[in-house]
Image 1 (tube, rainbow, N blue to C red):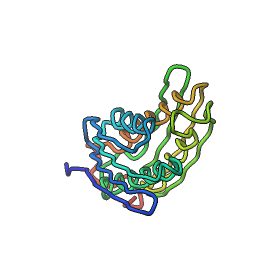
Image 2 (image 1 turned 60 degrees about the vertical axis):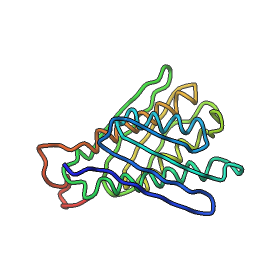
Image 3 (image 1 turned 90 degrees about the vertical axis):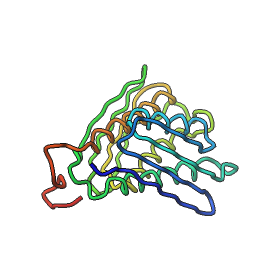
Image 4 (image 1 turned 45 degrees about the vertical axis):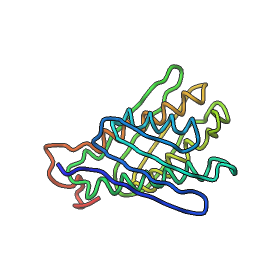
Length: 195
């Protein structure tokens, strides 16, 4: 199998981001965004998706975390798109539900090439550390848009740390499932012939 890896960078007046992704990894991560809780979530994403992930972000955190979180999601999405190539042989669809104590999150994904995002639920606290809770939803939306995913997410619970962590873990597990190569399939999983 061809190595499914990509390194993507993006530099703007607001952020300087570089992401290296290996889809068929061991769950190793090296993450530094300057936002402690976000680093924790990206490390959990790598660990539970078995992705090898390196993320470097130098962002305008003196403003707030919005640009950094958004741009990391954009670059990570572009890295998934690049690493998957023509998506030949992938499973394509996946559905994962992950609990974390009182919280639960579910993610349904189609690696379709057609960006679409839907989200249900609310986060129980406004922020976790220096991370504004609603940025978890925005991260998922920006990732879906730039990776070409149809993505439906849902969260429930009463602790925002657990709700967000369950979301990142379910997203990781769903993407791991959907991007796996099905040995029975030699073509692209679409009647159109391409994704």
